[in-house]
Amino acid sequence: MKRDNKKLFNEWASTYNKDVKKTYLNNDYPFCGYLETLNLITDYVHEHNHHTVVEMGIGTGALSKKLYDKGHFIIGVDFSTKMIDHAFELMPDAKFINTDFKSSIQYMNNDSIDCFIFSYAIHHLSSYGQYSLLRLLDYKLKKGGVIIIGDVMRNSPQELRQLEKRYKDIWDTDEHYPTQEDYRKNLYDIYKVSYVETSHCAGVIVLEK
Ligand SMILES: C[S@@+](CC[C@H](N)C(=O)[O-])C[C@H]1O[C@@H](n2cnc3c(N)ncnc32)[C@H](O)[C@@H]1O
Image (tube, rainbow, N blue to C red; front, side, top):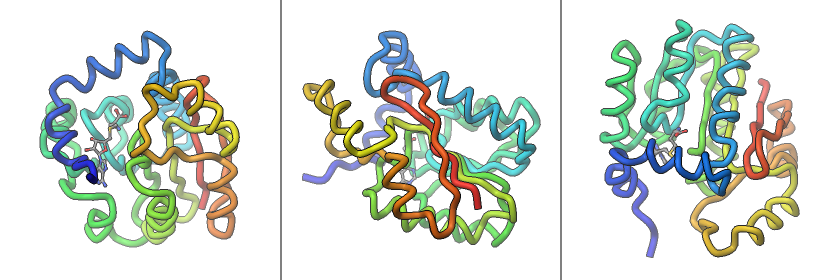
């Protein structure tokens, strides 16, 4: 039976931060490298002066809050109302769009966004769903804009399979983790793809328009 992610995240919202912290501190899949990943994305966005930032799957707001405090304009997309409630408490002046990734695009003007960020969120789409969404976001990005994705990820499908083997007892087979090689193969015609590893299971992909 297909998992109902919207329901799952509404139910998880109140304990999400605590649960993430626990696996992060244990250095375990899936959140090992979580803070390093968030910090790398924050530094990149801030250093490149990307003012208007859309976080897709903003959750409780841990990543966007760092940018909000540095003066960036945050637009948070999430289909979980409960997750947005937490993020809104942290960032009362941010804008929120309470719907799914694809539907949220209609509320954004073309060439209006400096940067899209995804933190542990894009893996909820199939690989095909990821590539088609990322192609649609291209229309919304300003010239020189970027998409930054932090997640459980590896450089190649082979390395991802090795990670899956290592964590076979707890591996989430409903999630679709990106690899740099697959992204490059499927998106090279519109984005320059680069990759940085942030832990033994996490990394960051940057897509430059
Ligand atoms: C694992 S959490 C990550 C939250 C946060 N970005 C972080 O780094 O902690 C994934 C988030 O994406 C949201 N989400 C998943 N699939 C979505 C979709 N198709 N459309 C909108 N939001 C989605 C969930 O509700 C959840 O808040």
